[in-house]
Length: 109
Image (cartoon, rainbow, N blue to C red):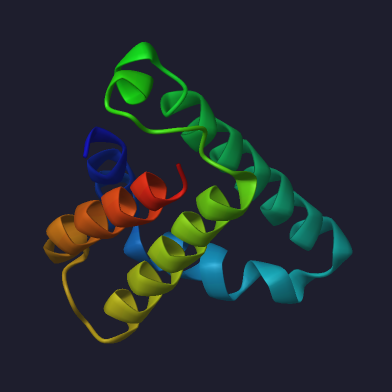
């Protein structure tokens, strides 16, 4: 929940920049695409690290795969982008994003 809320606060603080990062950066060439991939890799590692705790394991959950972390990020990015494009409020995504993250990451165990 805290990680999703942090993502949403950041995205909401500059929605035009967030949308540009998601939609426009890949069209800026190889260097920009590499930067975006490197950032995604860093977020993926962060998700895996946040889920590699004694509390996570005590809940009966296993390691989060790279693929599951990428799926979570991809879905969150697309949901954020379409919400901004449709004139919605990013903060309204909080509950569905948290439920989806729990379902996806819990299933990765």
